[in-house]
Structures are given as structure tokens and as C-alpha cells.
Image 1 (cartoon, rainbow, N blue to C red):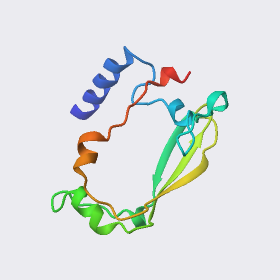
Image 2: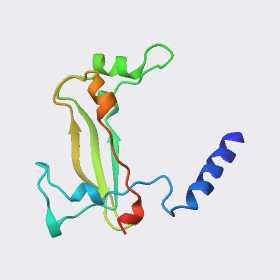
Image 3: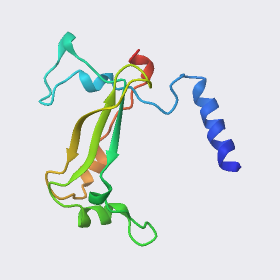
Image 4: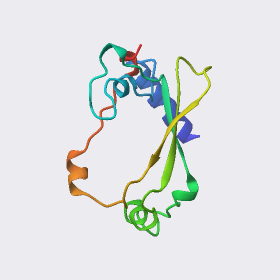
Length: 129
């Protein structure tokens, strides 16, 4: 019961700022191609993206025994297919279309540079509409 109240309270708080709570905009994903070149006015972006894990290649971690950042580098192989990437256009009524897959190019490694300098910005979905 306590968990439900907390989630509802957080949702109510965030809904005062945006109607797209717990969502992030995807427009920025379409502004540049895979080489970082500006797509200009031809830029397209999906309404929604989801990553579907390939569980056979992403073994579960028992956090009481080993932290995921120690487990994953030891168990996920190079060139492993770890996620399918799906997208849909206008609304939740549109069908999901597989647009790609996420594969590793090498073994995972821990990185202080990544911990301290690699950040992702979550844009408000209202900027997409």
C-alpha cells in the first residue's frame, strides 16, 4: 500500500510541470545521423522508443552476491546482441516497428572517464510536440 501512495504522489507532483510524466523526448535522436552530421529539415524522430533485452545474452545479476558492474564485464561477450530497438510514430495506437539492434563491439569495461564525464540529457517531451 505504501509503494502505491509514493508512486501516486510522485506522479501528481510531476504532473504539475508536464503531462508527459516519466517520459523523455526523442526529437534530438533524429537531428543527427550516425556520423554526427546534421540532418537539417529532413530530420525525423520516433514518438516512442523501447529497448527489448535479449535475456540469453544479458545474464541476471544477484546484487546480494555481486554488483552488476562487476558481473556484466565478466559475462557479456564481445559482439553480443543485447537489445532489439523498437519504435512507433504518432501515438500508443501505432504498431511497434523494429528499427535496429544493439550489439557490443568489445567486452564491457569499467571506466572512470565514463563515470565522471559521460552524461545523457533527458529532454521534456513537450519539446517534441
